[in-house]
Amino acid sequence: MTSTQDQARLQAIEEALSARWPETDIEPSLERIAALADMLGSPQRSYPTIHIAGTNGKTTTARMVDALMSAMGLRTGRFTSPHLESVLERVSINGEPISAADFIYAYNDIAAYLDVIDEKFDTPLSFFEVITAIAFVAFAEFPIDIGIIECGLGGEWDATNVVEASVSVITPIGFDHMNYLGNTLSEIAQTKAGIIKEGGSVVLARQEPEAAVELLKRVQEVGATVAREGIEFSLSSRALAIGGQLLAITIGEYTYDDIFLPLHGKHQGANAATALAAVSAFFGGQELDLEAVRIGFASVTSPGRCEVVFRNPTVILDAAHNPHGAKALAETLENEFTFDEIIGVFAAFADKDVVGILNELEPIINTLIVTQSGSPRAMATAQLREIAEGIFGADRVKSTENISDAVKLAITDARRPSHDESVGIVITGSVVTVGEARVILKRLSAPEDEN
Image (cartoon, rainbow, N blue to C red; front, side, top):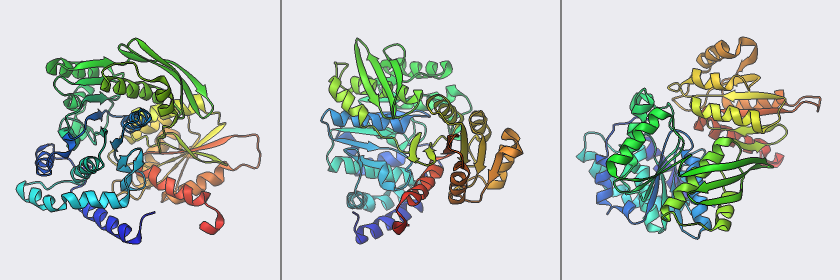
């Protein structure tokens, strides 16, 4: 439980961070974060790290690596972004969000240096650079045995790339953030390949050919040891199970079978193979303890990633915010759920490929409710409705002005007098959309005297 004093201090820190240059505006450079880390004594070098880049699946893969390392007895620190409900989610220690008190302590450790760095450079430290430094310091103070660090955006000049990773991981690369990363998969892959370190180990999830070429070019340039999905490791079998799926994963000469993963979707099975390959690479390719692997995967959670959060009707949250993620969501809903009808609630950022996302979702969503999140980046409801009607047809699209009303409308529409129909609700479009919906659904699920 966070004390009132800590809650007030945390809120003040969040306001100070939010007043900084936003994490969605990028000035590609490692100079500022490198200078800050140097002043702090390079805390990110006091523990080994696994560094994860890619377009989709980074956060879930990081959570899987965290769970596996914990099951093997290591103290873990995990840095991911963005958060769903609380900024504390971004910095996790031993699988749990950092406490408000420890977050405040880490911020106080670096606060005196922020103005110094701001004055030294033309561009001040961004929100993301500062919170990255907070994570580095918190992990050093704990201390941890292994850091699992997710890139925020790109790779080469991402603030997290001041780590000297023991293992670098690249999850599937697709189109996103093209204004910074480039308009082709080759250009995007070149930037993400920047996390691959000289003489290090790298794990590559399955990639489109043009992305794979650039990643392997970087591997060769720096003399890294590579493990490629489909060659050095693979998801060798997958079967649906109640509450998730049952997997077998092959890493080199070793096969790990009867793995229960409590997540839905073929893409999550692939993420599991990538995560296990990363852990194997960290331990030098030696055979891993099968029971620890099973325990680790069985404990994995991934909030906001095809997450069932409400019953009667069933409500699924998924933070898909690009066409690649939307395609994975659509395939999972079609193949692993038995709804007769699906109602979608959708709110997206104006700078995203909304047309591409909705084209992927259209075949599996019967009725779409478009709305607007509280983010200043949100696309206006009227504009979103116009786009949606062009793809779904006007008769399949409804709209509300906020996510709360959209969620309530979807639940009302899904509760049919007849019990013969199974109607599901999927809420998607952005991490902010899912985060807001999660809070609303928790409130709706609470007993009457708590509302």
